Amino acid sequence: MNEVVTHAASTEESLPEVLMRLVSELHDVAYLIERVEPQLLELGGTAILQSPESIKVLQGIDLAVQKTRGLAEFIDTITATIPDQWTVDVSTALSLVKLADMRKALANGLRHGHSQPLGKAAGDFDFF
Image (cartoon, rainbow, N blue to C red; front, side):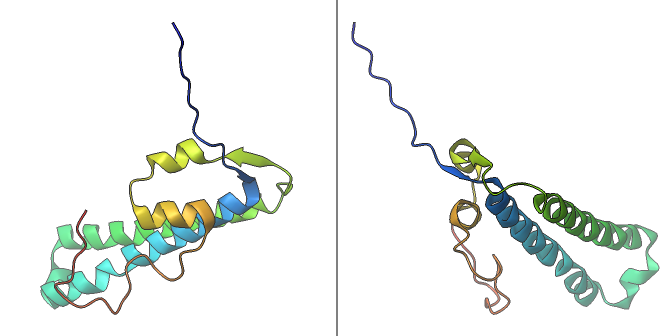
């Protein structure tokens, strides 16, 4: 019995370049999370600041932003010590990323700007 074996193309890339794209994505995530807080305040008004549970949610949002930025800075800092010659195969990892824009940004860093532009009109949505 003849067996045909196919392999996905190997995508060897410089580890520091891949990590810096990850840093960029983490900063983008922090930005998106950070945008939630003012929207909650706008929707709930100043009364939202009177609820202990609401304060906990707002503090959780702040913590999520701080942790995301902290992870980005950590990766950014250790990346500076990694030789450019170190490479990794990102093909399997990329196949697990479900968001097309994020997959594209992590694959080649060609996406510019944030994943959710500020200029998007209210009511606009993407099908997925």
